[in-house]
Image (cartoon, rainbow, N blue to C red; front, side, top):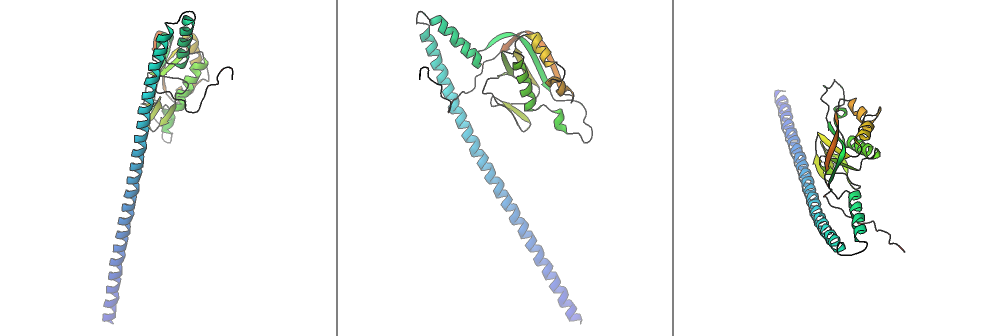
Length: 242
């Protein structure tokens, strides 16, 4: 009887040891597979980043070439008599509309910063932060109020400007930004200010959550030109007479 009991105990111990070894081996294999998957993901992201950087350099080169050609056209136009002055004015106007010309003018400066109001238990912290859609709404409201030029943290806003959130930062013209955000707008200072402060507007909705907002009228604001790449792959202008 005792011999049989000993045998059963030995078998139980051996089974326990084998089970422990199998579990350890399984976890080791699982961790190894996870590490391989993470490494593959890093390699994929690295390849994508390199591709984007190469594309950005290519576009910057094309922009430089186009601007050099534009300068050549302007210099050539100055030598032509008759309609030269009208052509130069029209070209300047087109560049102003496209945001490719720096300049000055009266307007307002809006500064936005995250809320510093203490959070209450259970409140969503995202409600007290500035998001890409907040900046987009402010910019749209400024243009709707007659702003002739707008910039955010020194980046000129043009037709192809993207304003989007990437993690804790906001990207504008491919430039990462973080609060505070300084928005300059050239136009009628009185009208721009009143449009921003109207009841139920974007500024009032931001202040509900404690977003820090400052609006100042300015007699002279410097507005930078857009310096990023411009590329048209699909749009083809229609030729007159065809």
